[in-house]
Image 1 (cartoon, rainbow, N blue to C red):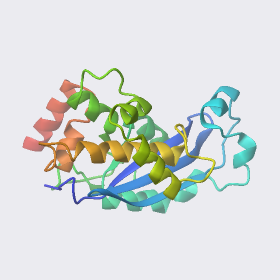
Image 2: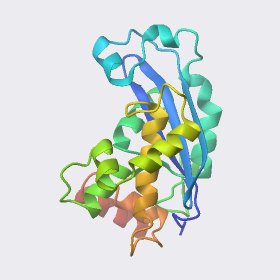
Image 3: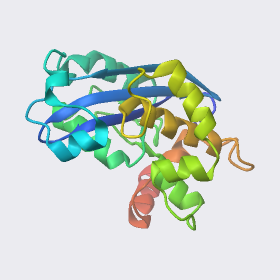
Image 4: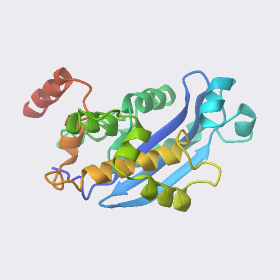
Length: 222
């Protein structure tokens, strides 16, 4: 079993949608108690970016026109997936956007069933699902609310100053959100009883429903 304390977990966030494509990505690699690597950049939009979206993330199409397309990052994302599991807050969104660019990566470890390989970007760790599972009675499981409730804002700002571009240090900026999710995961893994959690446990409890978790358990058995 892969220990969550020693395995690199690549926390991903994308800005964009299926119409304009991925226009910004952020990756924060968490290993043990440290964010050991980050990467972010703007990516060329494939269509117009609507005004409402720009109000959310602050990116205009003109800001991306001279940027390389996200598809140029194939080797980088394949390398991430081959070295550790991917993670996101609401991972189904990142999974859908990623698969919209590349349906399948090369064979990589299925971290839920470590004896097997899978040509998939998943199975994913989902910090939203994990906190819903462990803390079901919280007022909200939004990323910003969790950062506030677990008093992680100061740590987030310190990491943002270290890793994020000057004008991308707020929520709805890709690397800022990826770091926020990584800090949530790190916090969970320091709580009593969770210090020895495995990657498989994180993935299993990131499942969207009890039915999915039961299917995962059956797959592990057989």
